[in-house]
Image (cartoon, rainbow, N blue to C red; front, side, top):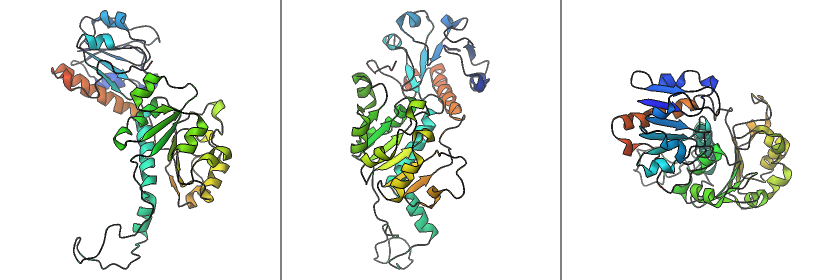
Length: 340
C-alpha cells in the first residue's frame, strides 16, 4: 500500500513514519518542502494530511485512493467531502501531543470534582472518623459507603465548562464532554464560526462571561506575549467561589501571585496545575501546602504523543488494507464539518 504524507513530517520525528509503516507492506511517500507535494503522490492508495488544503481537485487526481487520514481535530485544513462522495473512508486523529494534553486536563478536571487528592490523603492518614468496625464488605449492617465521610464530591454532569484557548488541544478536550451533557463555553482571540460551534458542541463567549458562568475553567492558552498574565486577580475574582481552575497551557498566562491568593483565601474552590512559573516546582513552593490544589510535574504532553498518532494511523491503514475500511476509527460522515 502506497501511503503519501501530503505535508512534511517534522524533522524531530525522524523515521517514525517508516518505522510505523514498514516495507514491504507499506511504501511511504513524503516530501521535505512545505507546500510541495512529494513525487508520485497521485498514485497513492492512502493520503495523510494536516496543513495541505485538500479539495476536490486534489482528490480527483488520486485514482487509486482508498483512504484519507486527517491529522488534527481543529488544525487540519481543507475539505475531504469529495472523497466521502466517492465512498472513500476519511478518518480523523488528534494532532501529535494534543490529545495527551487534553486528556491530562480532563483528568485534572475529574480529580478536582471527585476530590481525589483528599480521598487519597484520607487513605494515607487511615481516616475512619466514625470508628466503623472492620468487617468483610456488605456485612455487619453498617454504612461503609464513603467510609472516610468525605464531603463535596461532585460529578461533571450538567456542569458549565469554560475552555480558554480553543485550538487543537481545546478541540480534543471538548470532544470528551458531550457524554456528560455539559454546557461548554469557549473563549479565543478569533471566535469560532457557527459551524465550528455545532461540530464541537460548544458556544463562544467573552472572557468575562465565561469566567462568571463556568463551574470549571480549563486553560490551554499558549505562551504568546498577548496572553501574559491574562488570568490575574480581576479574572479570578469573576469566577464562582465554587469553581475550579485547570491550567495545562503555559504558566506565564497566569499571574502566579493572584492564583495563590485565590486558592489560599478560598475565593475559588481549587486548581489543577501542570505548569508553574518556576520549574521544577521548588520544594518549598506554597502550592505544595494547599489542600485545594492538585499538582503534576509538567507531564501532560511529551513527544510520545506522536507515537499515539502514528499508532492510530497504522491501525486504520491495516483495516483498509484488509478490506475493512468501514471499520476505521473516528470516521467522518458526509456533512461532518471540516475545520479549516
